[in-house]
Image (cartoon, rainbow, N blue to C red):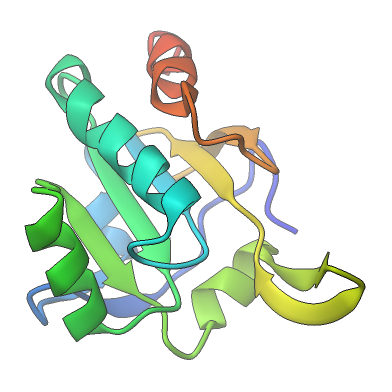
Length: 151
């Protein structure tokens, strides 16, 4: 499980436009990487729109969303809600697994695998400086923004 003071893992994933991104694309400025379960669902939409609305205040920082949904799903989600940042398609769940957010969940007594809503704040060198686990979507972007000052 990825934690504070550890380097973010290497990866290569496509964004909502089909453009490949890697860890190198995160370097050079602080980066917020938020993992969410599914495009266009209630909690995920609240979280994504929270980052969208707060984005002008994330001066000098990048914001990146990651979920197991595919490129087409991300494109529709980004267009529908006017999301101006990168959404990465981790369809194989490789990045989700490597950072420890692909976990067993339970709903109505049924167990299944899914993304535990988690956010990582990385410094300009790609080292984790803060982690939020089991994120509550409402107000989360503001919490991350407040922590950005120290990075």
